Length: 156
Image (cartoon, rainbow, N blue to C red; front, side, top):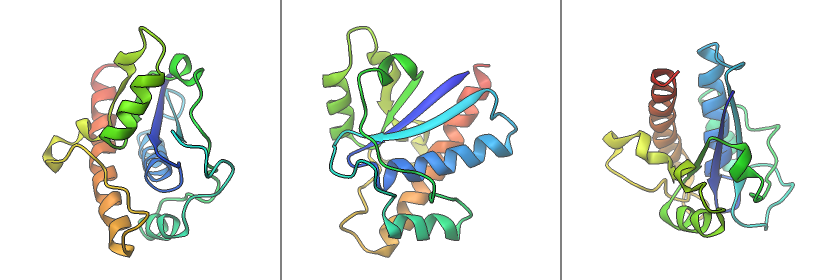
């Protein structure tokens, strides 16, 4: 079983979006028995809260369901339990690397590394943006999720 963890700041916008998008792609590929997916935040502000309403609405418009997800904060055990820990931006990557136990940093990288065609390194935080910010996040997440799934399939 390959375990993937998506991480953003509060786990209410970007990482739950990536969680839902990637879970759907994994299910459509018939790989649910081989790949598990979760998400977390580096911060603790939203623990137990559902994803942002705007993220939920934007995702639903594309057929993704965020309704069952609840924010959680990353814990040290995640570094041993997950094979891929994917940060949504450079700040979260730095925070993850700072808390990562020695010898586990190879698991931690930027999510958009899987979407070089996007020409970006960071999935921008849509929290303070307009409704179109959430659509832009979905575009980036869909591209990176497809790239990640392709790479995982190549390495199986």
